[in-house]
Picture (cartoon, rainbow, N blue to C red):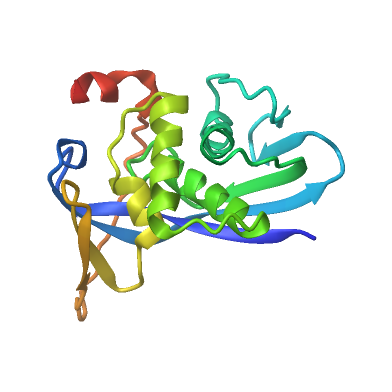
Length: 207
């Protein structure tokens, strides 16, 4: 049986490059998202496909970084196997997204969170919210190699409609802030300028 899961992108109202410095941030989930379908199979292969990308297949006993889009998904499998010892077996995963890639809207975090939500539900892992966003961040930090803070994955898991999230990344305490915008709204412009966190410049800036 095929099942579907979604996770949103985000914009940040206040607090740029402060989440990995244990500072304050205020992200907002947006109406652009990653949609993921998952279907278990009898084959011992995990097959990934995404519109406009080359399909990728791998076995869970040999998860290796390949430097392409699939690393964000492989990292989630790697983290769950390392921390929980989960045996997944075969499956087919298909990805579609309305989040522009490399536009600063956290498409990678949405992808990681959509997958960990799917695996949590389909395999009955019983992960709580903190484990969901922490494992997703660990996948990006330790497998993909991007030393991001917690904000993006946190917003993808915890975002709610018509609210911002005030997050203290030192104490990991948060509160929801109602967005009573009336006739106003936030508008995000796509400048078509592409950036890649995995290229190394982000890690250099953090260091």
